[in-house]
Figure 1: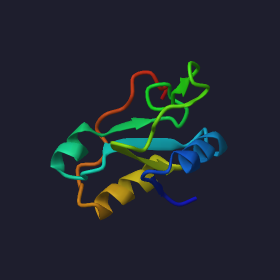
Figure 2: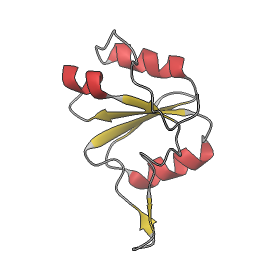
Figure 3: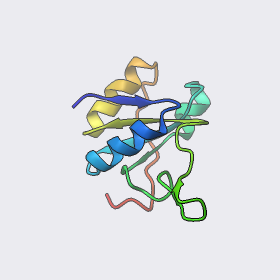
Length: 100
């Protein structure tokens, strides 16, 4: 599998998350600047911090609005994607809720 970028496409992100629930997701500001790279966080696809279902309105809440979701099967694939974006530092923040 290659890296998949989700921008303003919640339906595709939801479908991908269920299909690749053992994969990895970078949650990153869509600006893709130094601050975004510093604040990005790695999650599992169905982590409740980035994958929320709103029971009041019976639908998933917005996922790909202010933040990009970058999905991949491996962390190495995400690291390669980051290098292509100009981030050589790699992933430094991991969600504490996700079990690593």
